[in-house]
Image 1 (cartoon, helix red, strand yellow):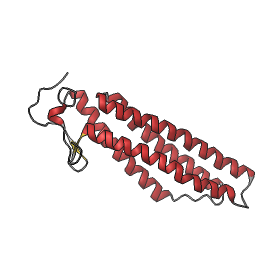
Image 2 (cartoon, one colour):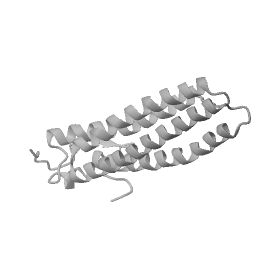
Image 3 (cartoon, rainbow, N blue to C red):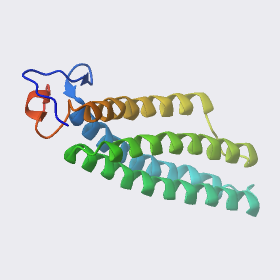
Length: 173
């Protein structure tokens, strides 16, 4: 059900710069890029730990298991991010919320698996506080516009018909 609007009634995200649809697209693309970058950058950490002369076969296997888990989660994150971008483009709020929910699950799983591996494997550093803070900020960055987009689609503010009135951007129009 679309709401008839003459001027923008929806929420503004990203420092009052973007409508929620545009914000979801921007943060989802950012999440995809950060996920891939983190996977690539963490590869050197895994290689350094595995290359240690003092690491046991059991610890190498633990690091391998962590790396495999992170690869699987990243592939799912990329697929979910693409789904979120698609959802925003076609006004499918369920695809957007599905991605936001997965982001929270991935963050909790990443913290848990990495902390567990760090406790068990000598030489595997984990700066818990800074990593957790970084991941919480990323979750908020994804969750906030996603929740607002979901709400706006639900109540009819954000729709294909209403988007010309809701469209807002400081830089990308």
